Image (tube, rainbow, N blue to C red; front, top):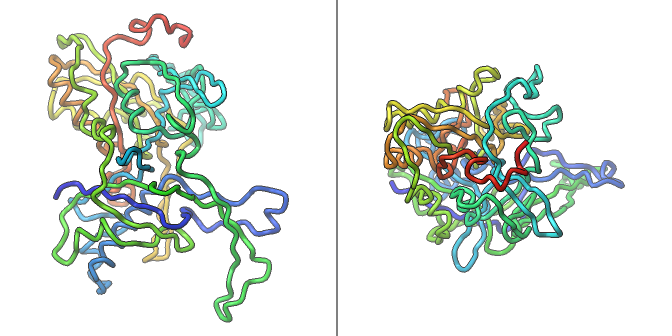
Length: 439
């Protein structure tokens, strides 16, 4: 079955997350209403698609649900879900917005115009890494605020925001190392320009008499999308004869808390920018000289939360390479990889609530989207082999927790990565005029 592109267009404001509304008393004089999670959580996305397949196909026998669409912890063997990325129409094409990679540093800004530079590579200095005893695997400072460049704080700030695929393509190409972009057009934070928070009050209702509960006025901060914007997702997998594929690209379904609603649409034209990234066009026309003895570098960028199994610092660098080795050695058995830099931030908590069992799912910590890994590649003797390896890594869910007890496997879209074009020289050798970025 071909990969199916699905556009989820919000009809109402949406709220994703636990029920944790603030009462009127708690909010007095404060702006403490809980905010919706963003983007669309992958645990919610799988629930939307599985439910839509069942409801749209008219399946009423609850005993056959698991055999048809799997469970919230395990999808059918050949299914793959990806995405949940925010997107808006631009010149009749749907432009996907992606997390800003952490290897892109903001150096300064003047009004809404921001200047960015790409971080250079730097060999690990693990002795300088903050390593709290209770969370030994996360490289960040004591408050998990500043990102780490191989344990050395980088000059400039990392913005945890969003940028359109056209600009992601530029920073994956690595043809330039400096950019000037306008906030709200070329990038944005904390949300893309077509999303804003909307405060919505409500009141709890007594089940018996349907009257309002005393002192139970509450509020949430919902996500409000502009017209012709929403989320893009992909589905791939064989469906049983009881299920209809077309229902994933039409109709409506509830989403999030408080009966939010989204429309599912198909036959949308994605911008060429995303297609070029997904197909690895930025790997074409490589000019590197390889003889098997020298090496090159490439950035690995997480665009969804990813999980690394090891929680021991001395094993972290090795664990980061295992998913890459598993793919690369099928093409080039003599390849050698080395972790050079690893930029990450405060870990995100992966969990969820299973409606069928009325139980909360297991808790896992994951690297946040935007996390960037710089890898040194050696032992590859020709450019065609290198290009094939990079394409084998690119646009795949390689950094997911895949065991029988995990609901956060690659089939759900976790650990989705993109790969930059390779470069031969170190940043200092290739762009000596940018020495102000080094220390």
